[in-house]
Image (tube, rainbow, N blue to C red; front, side, top):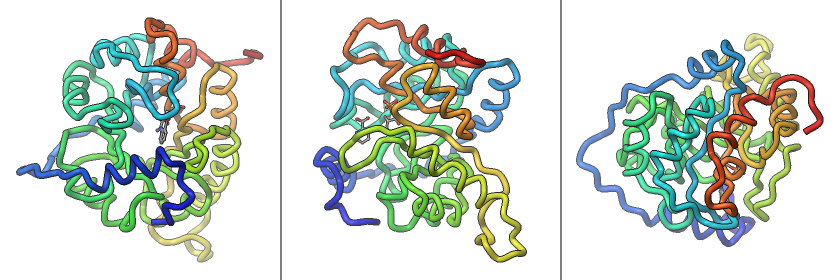
Length: 279
Ligand SMILES: O=C(O)c1ccccc1NCC(=O)[C@H](O)[C@H](O)COP(=O)(O)O
């Protein structure tokens, strides 16, 4: 793990809370996961942009809190064409909970991501989900955590912020990689982050192993997700042109400032962002 000194205070606080969080589950999770790559393929087949819509009651950068029932939010996102649902389960900075995720997963039939700050294996045994987030920057033993997640049936979504972290992720065998456009020092979003990392991911996964340029456990295919800062159909097209297989969108769908904003419509305008347009 890198030093904590170049993290925004909010992120340092999230990380400290994550490290302190106990997980005293008696049973090891054993989940029969819904496949994200299959869900992405199904969306592509019927002309939807694959959007992972995020149930994110609040966040350090949100301009408010939405108190709506998380299940109603998730169902509204699926009605708008969401390919999968991301659920923040972090309680103190994002207003999430594992219980919300369980209720959501029972109510929808798309894959559900547990978006949290998991730093130890024991913290995986809190709730069943189809995908589990692992953030390269925050863990010391990525390869072991990927293996531990897979043993439980989770599909690990490994999050990176730059090319060096991407290499770490791919060499550890990550098959689903999220490139987060929000930097952890100032919490600013810049879609160029995805644009600069994505070609490197494609190059690394295509290099012939025999030429010795890539580690032997780099997968042939990787599912690449552009995370954070996608707020308009134009942003969607931009990330797709840069190679995103799917987009993870929270704030633009939750629209925290406007408490009663229509989550179905907010999802649909991104899901339908195909073809040419200037907006
Ligand atoms: O969203 C935040 O304010 C935030 C602050 C500090 C660490 C992480 C944070 N967000 C986590 C996420 O990765 C996003 O919720 C997710 O990618 C969606 O981003 P957005 O569409 O920009 O809400």
